[in-house]
Image 1 (cartoon, protein in one colour):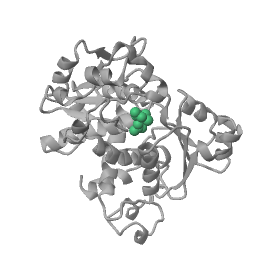
Image 2 (cartoon, protein in one colour):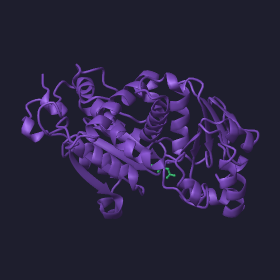
Image 3 (cartoon, rainbow, N blue to C red):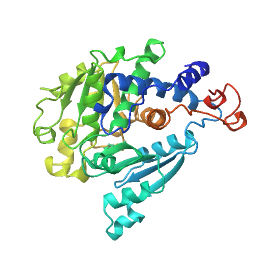
Length: 356
Ligand code: NCD
């Protein structure tokens, strides 16, 4: 995408925002997903600039509220917020008053009382960000992973990455969502405990892709009624048919260890080993949300093959989260207003240069 086109997208008249919160992929629908991907494409262009920072959220405050471990999701959101010039507060349960017995509600109300505009919440309990959204008066709430339930921005960045790879191969610009029509997505691994799987199923199927699940019976959800998926009868056949293989980590912290006889047996029967890679079609793309556990769901050499796009997913995560923050917090018509060009990298190089 050219710098001019990116600037035009980002400076377009305020569109209907996708808010007020992003708790589930279902909050977006196909049009909302397409809009996030479109705006993220513009931010990906911003990220390639010499100064990858724009003044869009200047004066806003975003807090990351993580009650669970994270490397990439937290850093990605914080990087995204900083690239939009927002102030960022980082809350970790390990050094907060939660350790003294403070409730989630009191924690949220305390943080909100400081005038926070965006709350990015990760919590081991499914539904916690929904609860936070009910308590929040002014802040937009973004679900950064709740228990086994959902991880919407992960699914969005997965779709973005797949579309990017397909466009590159076709020698075109990533645009629209037609590339997902009929695309065969195979989600392989611990589906039962995976919030990534649930958000991916909603996102890919909303865009017209066909989703198949492959997992030992013990790691499939107890009921798939109403899920727009099929279950693979045979892993080798499903691999051969897949356009995209979305690998999932065994969620040991959610007890998945007890659902498999042994890690060795799991790898032998369900891991993406070198032998299974040879079954894949040449066009296949392997995604993994990270963290990868080499030697369990993916063998070490497969993790390093060019078909595995995990690092690219991490890179794209920043643009996706910039887009989500922008669409939730930055669509009140104040984008870039009053910011001197000297602070934004010069005229024509960042959206801050274009006002009004
Ligand atoms: C995932 C998560 O935490 O849900 N990781 C991530 O956010 N990139 C997947 C996982 O932990 O397996």
